[in-house]
Length: 178
Image (cartoon, rainbow, N blue to C red):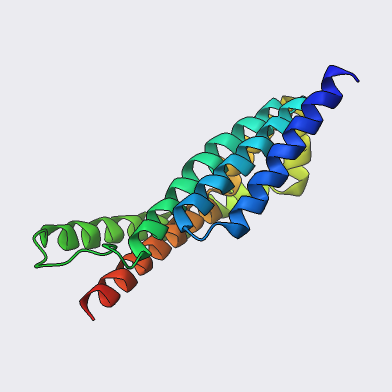
């Protein structure tokens, strides 16, 4: 057997075992940790295919940021101590949150009214993206498209993730008081 075949068999075993752990563990924290192991094994699969950029994104985005968000939400929704009880000591956070939400909404409205989002989307659309891939390469073209042409959907996705976390916190607080 070649070293690549052995690496594939080891990674496949780890990926299947961790995927099995995701659906069989009764503790949600263990299930999330097993999912992180599964995502890391997928990143190693990408490395064996010599796709360093995709492996890096897999580790940073999925195994890193998204799984930390999932772990936070799962721990907030657990019935044993999930949720904050007692008086709300940090009322200033509501004011700061509303102020920052107004600033974000104002920035998005201004960029929509100025047409900067539409111009960037025209430049980085499918034709512009294929031209950027031919000129720069895949990673730089992806960055150009994400942060110039498709920055608005990227920001909207971030806002939706924040809303989902806030909804989980509100649900956990409601169930903790009942």
